[in-house]
Length: 160
Image 1 (cartoon, rainbow, N blue to C red):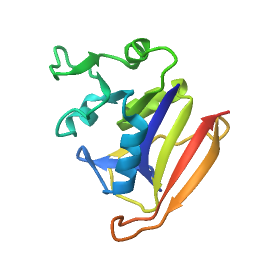
Image 2: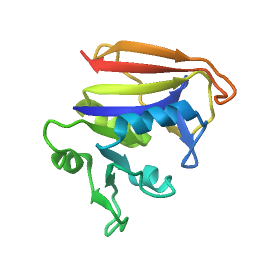
Image 3: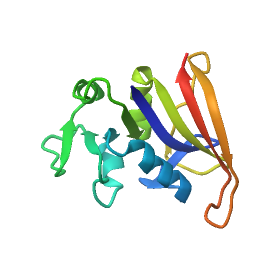
Image 4: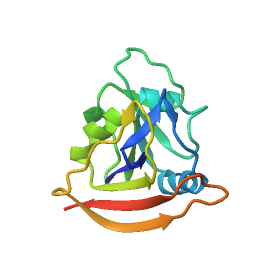
């Protein structure tokens, strides 16, 4: 199963200047729990936003750059090549950025979206979901608290 995992604001904002717009510790924990021991597919800019490769995951980085050198990663030049190398019968996660999410939607079976209940100025956005294709399966609301500056909701979508 191919799963998109993302956190997006009410206006679908994802980030600005290759940085996240918020820090939600419970969402980071959920991301780690869901993606650990799986393949994760991302664009080069998303990969470069990490201080180092994320532990316990196989990184597939999509880039147009020739001879892109990240150590410990599989590098491909398009999404179809990334999908082609995924192990059969295992979950894999598309983790961003905006262009990779857009390209990945037609191949995605499930979306794990953290909806941050605020609006942000951004330069990268999550694609608008076509609700004739997707069904909202579950929601779990998380109010803001001392560790979270914003209310947010975990939303799980399944392809109809």
